[in-house]
Length: 142
Image (cartoon, rainbow, N blue to C red):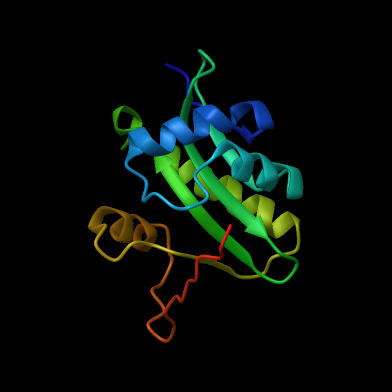
């Protein structure tokens, strides 16, 4: 089996991306819908990366967003049957390359504290936990 191809997502991938997030057990958010995924792709065509298998099916995703000031990684998700095959590392490497190319000099990310495998992964790819910060969120009325 050939390694998946890492590429930028297109709007037609939105439904498959959402399905992958569900199957991968990604922490659900209020923006898990096709419109939000398509809006992100339209806003930053390089932000949403997918790992695509030979058969055209998605095996993993990563959002590598750059707002002109900082790079942020979100939604690293790999289907359980494709884990421990290097897909997550390949997605992160491509995300970092893309962010560097767009001008980012620092990258941050959010990780769920109870996801011990995820925390171990981020440490393994040289990310350090910054205990000086915490995240605040507010859902806006629709």
